Length: 373
Image 1 (cartoon, rainbow, N blue to C red):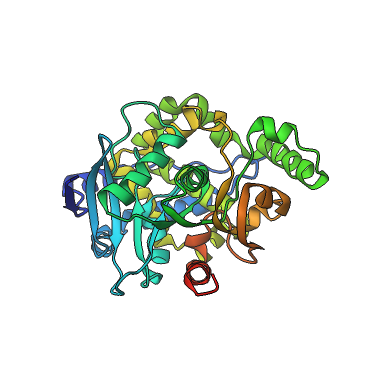
Image 2 (image 1 turned 135 degrees about the vertical axis):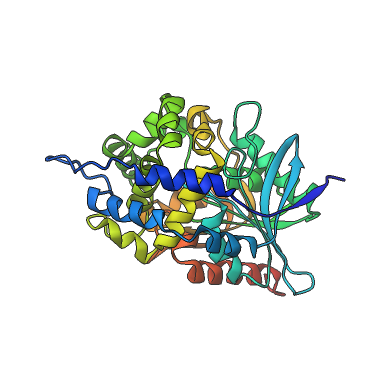
């Protein structure tokens, strides 16, 4: 049996002192005269840097450590995870997976609300306190690892699964290739067909959706192009400059959340400053920003087609993909129980509207366990 080791976060004092010294020496720049829209501004970054300098990390560390954390060897890689057990006997299990640029910590407020579930929130390999894979990252390997963690390590023969961003395809793969383990799959980033499948689309709504994605890629895809072509060069800068790291991460939190893109401070209506600084600190102290780029560099978007999902599915389309065609969901999720477009909640839906998403997950699970489910 795989040994599970209890884990607590404790950042050494000298690491925090070094961070503070670097923040004190930050060389901040003004916005360019013809600044392109980017979800970040010099004024807002200046505020965040000042807040990070006096951030009560020890208090935040105590809050994080109130969530039971563990390390386990999963297929030769040490994986960090939070395991919140319900007091309810026989509670269903739920796997909650993060994406980029966030960490397990951004999912915890959502996980806390599901007290009638056993909730497992892992850190993906190369993120935070999890080791990176020795070999190249792949979605199928990650799906295999997550199922092994849930079934072999933790003993859950069947469980619900949720993923978003880079874990969205992993979520689909788990449900498609391990249906015997999956009670139901929850998605806020519904299945995206492969490039060949997109090129072959004829439905007018699907064609418009894919064209819109291509149009958006030019002005808004620069981060992914750099992370997918020059990850190590970028990582050197972000691993050496906390202000640079903070700007790179926060820009995406602003752009992708359900907030006012013209006022970057509005992100804090969805994701508080404390949570933003927690994410930045976790990346900083674990030196993991470089390994977090691996899904982009190692061919993540060149994947094979994912087989259709036959297990029950609940799809809640986040606002930034509000034009996602229902026909795509119905073609891929063959037992689609729920399809809706969220009124609130962007790319980080369970972090932005945790109470609403917890209720949706609970209702889906109850519908499958009721006598008529």
